[in-house]
Amino acid sequence: MAQILGIDTSNYTTSVALLDCETREILQKKQLLPVKVGEAGLRQSDAVFHHTRQLPVLFEELQSVISHETLCAVSVSTRPRNVEGSYMPCFLTGVSVAKAIHTVCHVPLYETSHQIGHILAALYSAGHLEAIQKPFFAFHVSGGTTDLLYCEPDAQQMLHIIQVGTSLDLKAGQAIDRVGLMLGLRFPCGKELEKLALRSQKQIKAHSVVRGTNCCLSGLENQCRRMVDQGEIPEDIAKYCLMTVAETIRSMADHARERYGDLPMVYAGGVMSNQMIRPLLKKYCMCWFAEPEYACDNAAGVAIYGDLRKKGGTFWRLSV
Image (cartoon, rainbow, N blue to C red; front, side):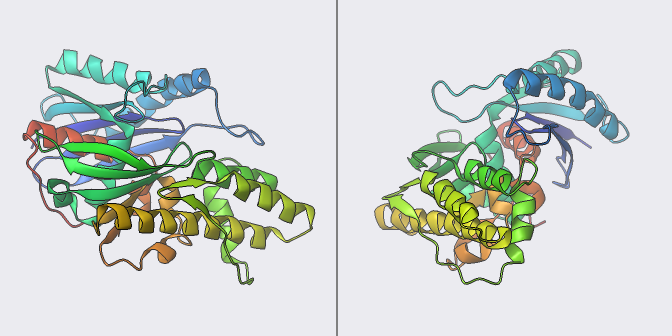
C-alpha cells in the first residue's frame, strides 16, 4: 500500500488528508480555527498559532493508518492562489510541517495552491476528475474569493487557471458572514444562515449587480441592513441574502458561457455547500458540485494534486 499525505492550513480550517494510491479512497481530518463570539475573523498571527496547535492533534488521529513505510509523498498548499503575490502567513504552518516530513521520510514534496486543492476536491467528489484533460469553468466561492475561473491542462497535464471574473468588492462568503452577524449568528455564519433561510415562507425576488463576468456584492449587505432596520424577520433576510448570492453566480456563469463557450462548470468552495443555492444553479446539464465535506476547506484536493504530480499528470476516474 502506498499513501500520499495532503496538508492544508487555510484561513479558518486545519486539514490533513491521506490518499490511498491503490483504492483512491481518501481519509481526511479537519478542525475549524476557533473564533470568539461576535468577532468576524482572525488575525493571521492567531491563525498561525491555532494551526500550530491543531496539526499535531489531527496527525494523532491518523497514526493508526499511516506510517513512514507506506508514505510515498507529501503535498501541501503554500498560497491561496496560483498568481503573483498570492500569500497568507497561515499557510506557512503547513509548509513547515510538510518540509519536515519530506526531509525525515525521504519522500517527494509537491506544492500547490489552496484554490487548486478546492477544484480537484470538487471534481473528485463529483466523480469527474478526468475533466482536467480539457478546458472547463470553475467557480471558487468562499469567504475570501468569488472567482470565476477558466481552467485548462498545461504542459504537464495539470491545471492552468485564468481568472475571468470576480467580485469587485465584497466576496460572497464575506457578505454571508456580515449578514449573519447582523442577525446575531456566530462566525462563520453560512450553515446557520442557511437554516434560517430554509424556514422563510416569503417569495423573494433577488437583485444581482453583475457587470459582464464580474459582480458587486456590497449592495447586498446594505439591503439586508435596511431590511433589519425595517423590522423584517431574520428568516426572510437570510433567504434574500442567499438567493441574491445564487442569482449573482448564475448571471456570472451565463456571461462566461456567452463569452467563452458552453464548457462544463464545477462549483467549489464553502459557499457552494449551501443547499439553498445549489438548486438554482443546477439547470445546466454540465455542472458539477462538490459534496459538502469536499466543498469546504479541505486537504483532499491537495493530496490528489500530489498523486497527479507523482504520476506525471495521469488522470484517474472515480465515483465516490
